[in-house]
Length: 217
Ligand code: G3P
Image (tube, rainbow, N blue to C red):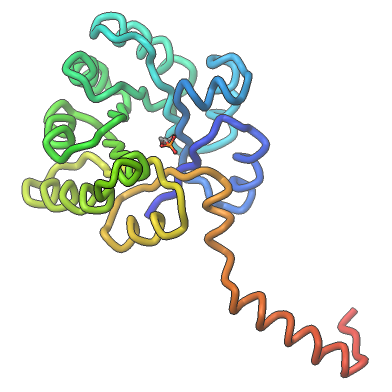
């Protein structure tokens, strides 16, 4: 499973990128707001840093305006994926922008039928929001599983990008189901390294090592 980092915080992306953990980056209007940066500037900086796709989201609601914004965002760098919302206008914009050779990430997906439409409109990525479904007592993972089955049934090449990942368990389940990509906040990716038995084991090794009185360096 590819790892995209869900943030516009350049320092945090750089830390994970240096470790080879970053296959791409996703941003959205809320993450740009949190960064306090100009969208064009910060997106360029991120796209220059990472090799993989960097999603930058349009904010227009009508198809022609989304297409115009998408074309401008796509010009920032070759690795930009234009992000459009899963509305009828967003699907129209997806069709046009993907037809022009751009990567398109269709976001705010909450049903398998929406994902089917996005694939037919030529989406490169579909972004089902797991955490936000869980927030309203629905099963975000069931949605990932349904989309996986539908895409496999018909050989759609649209990649499933599990989004709104809030926990290490979300990450684990998305990988088990066969999501192509997950996008997660840096904090969740770092938490994946943690295990209480690792901490406990290390503590006991350190205590025994101290008793030997030895040094390696
Ligand atoms: O990738 C979409 C993500 O930014 C939404 O996450 O936690 O705001 O639902 P969240």
